[in-house]
Structure formats: C-alpha cells, structure tokens
Image (cartoon, rainbow, N blue to C red; front, side, top):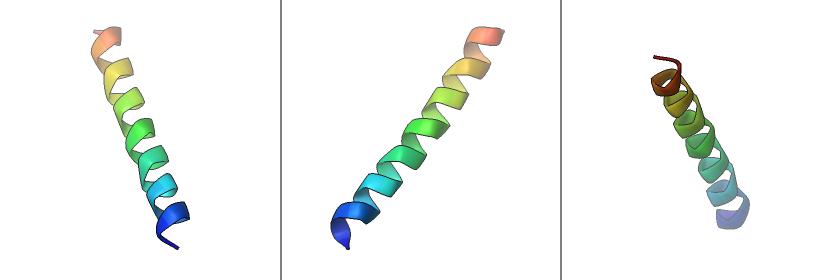
Length: 27
C-alpha cells in the first residue's frame, strides 16, 4: 500500500510543480 501511495503522491506533487513553473515562465 505504501508503494503505490508514495508513487501517487509523487506524481501529484510533480504535476503541481510543473503547473507552478509553467505559470512563472508564462510571465
């Protein structure tokens, strides 16, 4: 359970970071 949960959290955090960086670059 810990394996897939960690993978899911990592993917979610990665997506948030990509969106945040994209917004900064668009400025």
